[in-house]
Image (tube, rainbow, N blue to C red; front, side, top):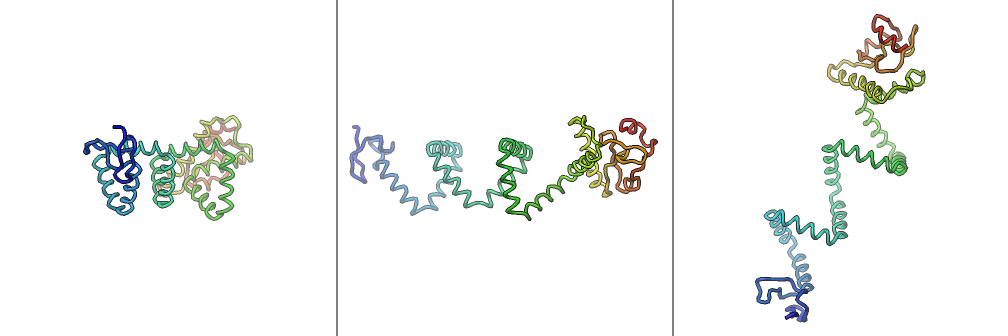
Length: 251
């Protein structure tokens, strides 16, 4: 027997158009797949909460089987999965934002690397997006920039000092990336000591960049961390007794 009559639409159809059911004599369900689909849809619409509760309970008791069935369904209907995902995100905007924030917090390094890679591969696109956002949200942009500055005071201090030093030709062109990183370390240390002691510290040039007797260079071996009061009282004065080695290397 290759055909079977559907008890709903009373149409003879091939057995492959019926779902297998070992509980029946024929081994196939009484409804054809089309009629069974219509029945399931109507039943779901009439008993939505109950059906969802039953499905959730089944997934809890059969986690592995549930994952396999869900994966199989998504692979067979990728467009439905995409549409369902978009609809869910639209209904849960705040939840999505919170979830992304938690993910970024847990994966700071990976998130930063991924963002930098995207931006390096699409420089023009991200430059345009930043400009558009800046023009459309000037207040939010300024607040974001200030927040970033306050979170990276040591970096900004190092960058500003480097800029000032370049203006008076105090930063050698032959400085290596390692030496520049070492210089940044002084500003990071200055900020850390300030937070730990409650006393404001600054990075001082042992041999002043614009000294009265001698001018030093903006290089790692000419830097040290001292209190802001000491730095202010020192001014542009320099005494060789403080560090004769720094004097020799900075000259």
